[in-house]
Image 1 (cartoon, helix red, strand yellow):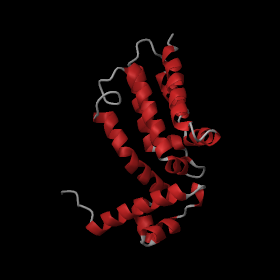
Image 2 (spheres, rainbow, N blue to C red; image 1 turned 135 degrees about the horizontal axis):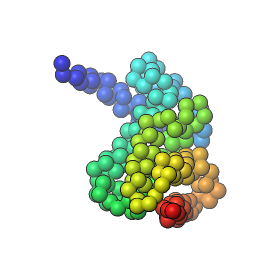
Image 3 (cartoon, rainbow, N blue to C red; image 1 turned 135 degrees about the vertical axis):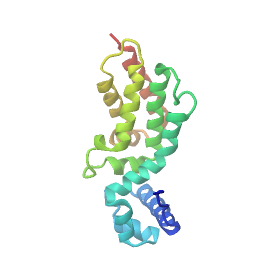
Length: 195
């Protein structure tokens, strides 16, 4: 049996909910204060629509995060250099981390909401598994590199939302380029530390 297409009003509601949640998290200094009721009111839908479509607040945040991440994911799986397949691992690993850092800087509010306490372990999220697996596989391509599983976790820890938020708040005017340069230098040291 062919898969049933969602109704047009359901698709519109989902898009309205995601846009409303994005706006609310972006405006909020404390993402944990954004409630499902707030999102429903902003989107002009009933709370039941949110719970049916996303399950709970964490499900909504994950859906929004995944929707915003999709263009980056496509660039990694199908795109050209430096993110896409076929790029040498010494070039691709830093590019992956830089892309994730830039994504989290551009979607800081959403990243913080996803990684906040009470949303479950960020390491259990689908996007984390995907980033970890992708980075681990790239590190495995490096001749003589060992411990790629742990190294991928350690490198991803450098782009946790709470750390990024802390570092941006310390020097907001120069944060983006400084963080990108620091991450590139750190990644280069890790990649050069092969036995």
